[in-house]
Length: 83
Image (cartoon, rainbow, N blue to C red):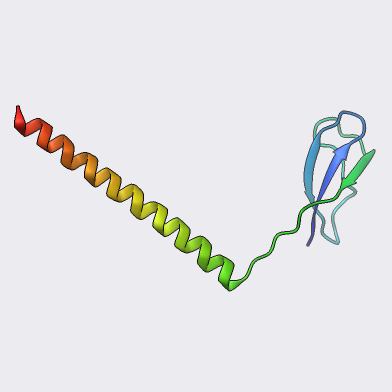
């Protein structure tokens, strides 16, 4: 089931449309016109390596945020008890 990108020739609105075998002809969600220009879209790739790299990146980002929060909490406790 491909997703196509369209631009309405009437109002200029750009949108994506999921095309199935039972889908009606695409129309602009803004003005409901059917005079559309199909745009060339970038393709998306997915593989085990890409998914693993994305997972590792998200994991490292979350770990950094946790470490920063722990450091801030620790500093706050020191400031509070030094008074």
